[in-house]
Each structure stands twice: as C-alpha cells, then as structure tokens.
Image 1 (cartoon, one colour):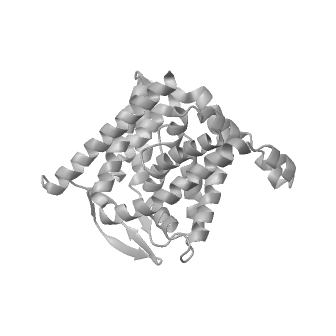
Image 2 (tube, helix red, strand yellow; image 1 turned 90 degrees about the vertical axis):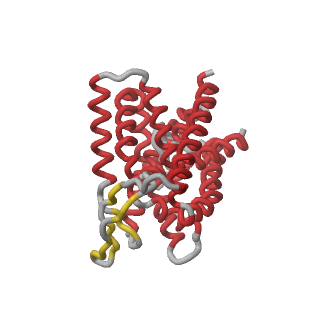
Image 3 (tube, rainbow, N blue to C red; image 1 turned 45 degrees about the horizontal axis):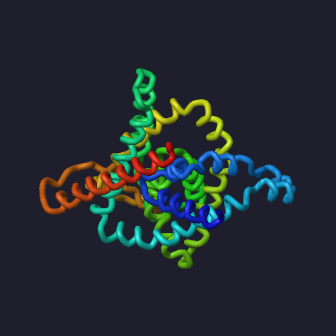
Length: 299
C-alpha cells in the first residue's frame, strides 16, 4: 500500500509540474482526493506553534502522506532538469504542448459543469476578468525576493489541491515557473537551495492554512468554484500562447521589467505547422487520458 501511495505521488507530482494538469484532479481520478484533503486538514499545525510536538506528530497520517509526498518530490526532481532544458532549447514547441493540454483541460471543466445558467456565465466572466488582470501585469525577472518566492509557493499550493487548475500554471501566471525549475535543476549552486526551501515553506503554509477552507468550500460551493476556475483558465490562456512580442525591457531599481506582451501569430510556416500539430497531439493525448481515467474513477 505504501508503494502504491508512492506511485500516486509520482502521478500527482508529474501533473503538478506540467502547467494545465492539476495534481488535485489527478488525486480525484486516483480516488485519494478526499483522503488527501482530510489528511492535510487534520494536521494540528497550531500544536506545533504551541510547542506541543507529540500532539502535532500524532495528527499526521504518516502511512499515507510520507510515501505520497516522497513520490511528489521525486517527480519534481526527475522532471525539473528535462523541462528546464526543453523550455530553453524548444520554447515554441513546449509552450504549444502546454497550451494544448490546458485548453483540453478547460473543455473537461466545461463537461463537469454539465449545463450553464446565467449565474455560471457571470462567474465565468468574473474568473476571466481576474485572470486577465493577473496575466497582464508586467513580468519581473532575474531579481526575486524571498517574500515573493514564499508567497508564490503558498498561492501555487492552493491550486495544487484544487481540481481543474494546476499549481505550475499559477507559477506561469506569476512569472515564477521557469525560475523555480532552474533553481531545482541547479539546486546546490548559488542560493538556489535556500530559494527552494523558502518556496517549499510557502507550499506547506498554503496547504496547511487553506486545506480546511478548501474542504469546506468544495463540499458546499462546488457549483460556484468550478465556473470560476473555468473562467480563470480561459482568461489566463493568454500567458501560455507560444508566440509573443516583447514591447520593451527596462531596469527599475535594479530589477528587469518586461512590459506587457503583445500576442501575435507569425503566419503559416514550418514552425507554426509543427507548433499547432503539437497542440493538437497534446490535446488529444490528455483528452484520452482524462476520459479513460475518469471512467475508471466513476466505475
């Protein structure tokens, strides 16, 4: 059973590191989602703050969380090098793959809604608006402070346990995805280890502080959360589009500021044909996977 949980962790970690595939959705497919939320929400983090260590450790479901967490960390370690290299050498192709995955994941969100009411459209519009505002913010590169790294981990972790949206996609929106991947790849160079430790602390904080709230919200307001997530993903797709034109680059207070990207299409050529073929192939593969796994979970 422990090895099975490790394999589940590998699946969840693989899902979380690829933008568009939700670790929460993977947990739902594997029939461990509710146990995962319960295990996280039952951890008495307040006892740790009160120095009641025995009570804190007694609240942790070790047999489930330890192999699961080890599997997630192993997936991150194995994939960080590969994805970092591919994003550097083949950015158009990789972002095309991510775009296809995310677009099809959005279609599956629509299927889960089953039908749309006027309220759903309003919530979807709200999600689109929020995502569009987020992705149009200027991206800050090179210089990152530990506070932003910690906050990014906390925000991404909340998405990790939500079905339908991935934590890595949140990192893409925040402009932190490739940065964190690079730090994982070169973990023992410069301050990368401390950056990953800070990010991990943010992840744990987000999981521990939000798990009870998410558990409660999903139990009572799933019909509101799913339309918002759908709108959020649709509005944020702009960030993943492979072709972008940077308007200007400038330094402000020793930080490199990249202005809002203008999305454009380069025309019909060999690059665009390959890119759209990759989008289609990635979309078909994730559709077949999600459909088969969802059918298994229902049965």
